[in-house]
Image 1 (tube, rainbow, N blue to C red):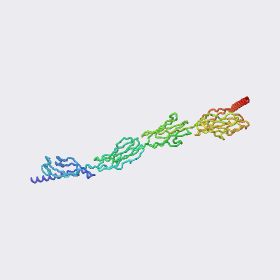
Image 2: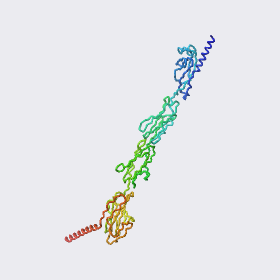
Image 3: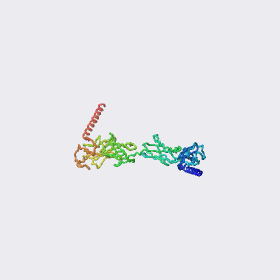
Image 4: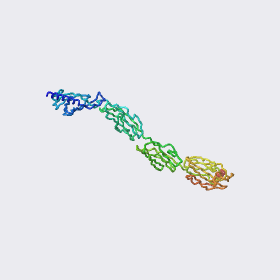
Length: 478
């Protein structure tokens, strides 16, 4: 009987030791802040024994299985736990505190507490914000907004307040670590964007001292190429041609639409819509003043280009008016004549089919005068030439005869003339003008020099009569 009691006591002690060794907690996390770390208590268990546990003022009993002490935080990685193994629960912890007794076999176990968090008051460390201050980008584009951040504890959140040029504030969440990023897509708003960062850790420590800003510029508006050949843009100016070319140097993402409108003084002449292209040529245009207006449309919005003009096309020679050219028969020299153009230009004439040319004098209002002061008697073809400043040219022909008393008569083939210009010793009247191009010259009125002689005779007789009357009065009054 005595042997049996001793054996039973031995088993109880052995069982209690096994229970003590069985009370094992999970391995603690490595504290990164050993001076201000916070730990958490763990659970104890026994496979077959009822365990009574007390830690400080926390008292728990389990029957049988695990003895879970009240979970609490501590600044110590280990703590002491008083335990008893027994077949029944103690009535209270004071009846058997620290000794073997009614509560069972007493033993003390040391708990290994798990690391919970760092109880620090230091804000996260922030460095290397981006984009760097005063970075400039051209719309459309994306901007990487980010920051480098570390902390002795866990960083709970990183975000940025982005203030747009309009004053609107957007909150951006930055993800990653230790580099936290947000790939920001720029809206179609141009100007300065201000960025302020906000980083906080597990203990609520905040770092909001870092700021930066960047500038968003609008897309570069391409201008027409300053060329006038058939493959590049026609710039404002005067042209002796019947076509206009519009071409842009565009360096923008696809897709885009370009609308090119061609107008003249009366309104819209042509509207062409181009898709992912920027070249258009307008052909067979009449002489007129033109203006080009272009509109570019893509995913970022609409760009209205400044008008290109005036573009002046002129393929017509000047129009003659107030035509007074040599025609008919003349009995005296000099022979005076003139014409008026409807635009700036040059006028010249020839009496030998273009071999010898004489430029007429431009006095005022595009009126050009000419004078023939010395010429032998004879029959002549008078060929008139005129052109504008762009080289649009025309010509016409009249005929006249010069018979000056005492002068010589030229009855010979006119140098440089055509076969139908061979006239021998006779007056040539009613020769029709030769017109080249589309200009209207008008009717040429021939005035006979015989009428001029008659008018001068009348004037001479009147003067003579006045002198005779004056002489008679003088004689009577003597």
